[in-house]
Amino acid sequence: MTSGGRSGRQQLLRESEHVSSAQASEHAVVPDSGPGHSPAAGVPRSTTLTERVRAYLQLMKLRIVELLLIATVPTMIFAQQGMPSFWLILNTLIGGTLSAGAAGAFNSYIDRESDRLMKRTSKRPLVTRVVGDREALVFAWVVAIVSVAWFLVFVNVLSAVLTALAIFLYAVFYSIILKRRTPQNIVWGGVAGCMPVVIAWAAVTGTVAWPAMVLFAVVFLWTPPHYWPLSMKYADDYSRAGIPMLGAISPAGKVASQVVLYAWATVICSLLLVPVGGAGWFYASVCLAAGAWFAYQCHRLLHTANAGEPTDKQAMRVFHSSITYLTLVFVSVAVDPFIGGPIL
Image 1 (cartoon, rainbow, N blue to C red):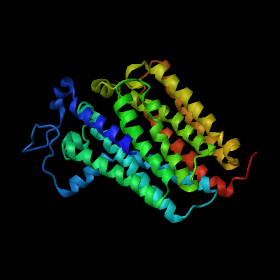
Image 2: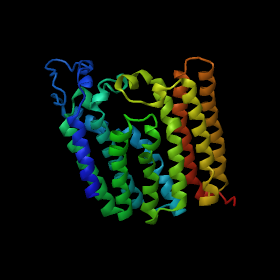
Image 3: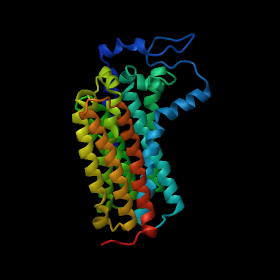
């Protein structure tokens, strides 16, 4: 954690010192904050306490945190094959919220210049300067340290180590190294988003077993058909910010075909929990039904793209259906130990 943290901090500070002149010239798109608005980027403006608290919560990207935590409790229940202790669940959720929030805050800091160029992100705290750049970076480090310490004290050593790794992967590997360099950024960068299931398993068992890796792979394969449709909808934003998301730089038909392939791979992978983890008929039934519906939505996107029709509406249907699909899969993970008799 010490060497990884030091390396991550050096890269984060280097990122802040190398803001491109092209992006700097675009600061005029930052919304006017009203009387007394200062053009100095990175300097916080005068705000109320309520505004600042709300801004720090926005830095943590809690909507993404919610999605990540959907997988945490079900994974813990499946690992226990019953209900873990209330305090273990609570401490894992608190630590997981803090760690995912820290990763989100680091990402907000790193992306602050590109966020100023995108309409979708123009209301974020570092763009509107409710929070200053330095404050955001300090906040991210504090929350990251607290999250790792929380797991170390209240859960176990392995979950603390995995938490530190997850924050590093998202803040450095994805946000700094991959995001602006390759259209496969969210594929390999998505590894960080898969870590909550492994951390949850480790919290219960103190180990990382094959069933945890199956769930890890499900989230990994699910990430592209979740994010690529969003990048199709906001292609102009990503292009303006110089972020090579696949949906922003490739023809709609090519993106949609990749979405379909990853969707089917996700569905097939989810069924591996039956032979590998002993999941029962309830889990398998939900995965098949939800998976068929999700794949159908992805095929509709491909059909729309190949027909040369506007894809924005169906792309957002796929985006939202991907969230529903993953939620259903992990709800079945939680319920199956109680009612799902074994298949194999």
